[in-house]
Length: 126
Image 1 (cartoon, rainbow, N blue to C red):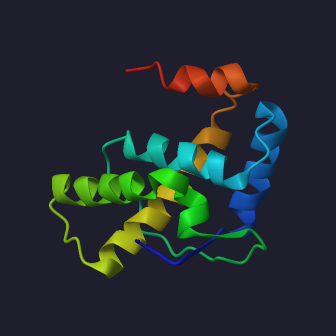
Image 2 (image 1 turned 90 degrees about the vertical axis):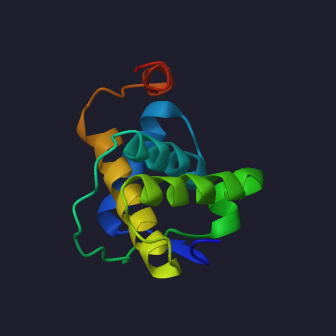
Image 3 (image 1 turned 45 degrees about the vertical axis):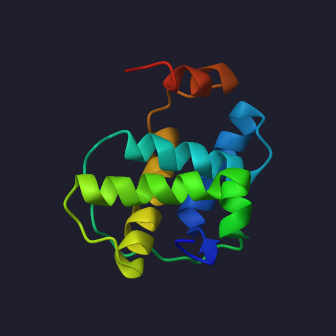
């Protein structure tokens, strides 16, 4: 497991709250999975900014990943290797958090997502 607990920033909590309303997806962890995968698909290194985990949204790694938690861990490891980054615990945790925050910002920042269908369309794009 990359991290034991995941705690979001207040900014990400607010963004996810708006996304929940638009898509009807009620669970934070499901939206966070989408955000992680969307960020990983960018194939660029997220900007290394400090993340202030100051919200009351917190979940365990297993809540985040569910039965697929091993797959999400493997995706982060593969991404680090692709980017020629180390795969030690600290690096994996750092880039997981950066990807999660960036993914949330991307999903909410484009105003493309107005409903669940728009979110699903992201999985069909190249």
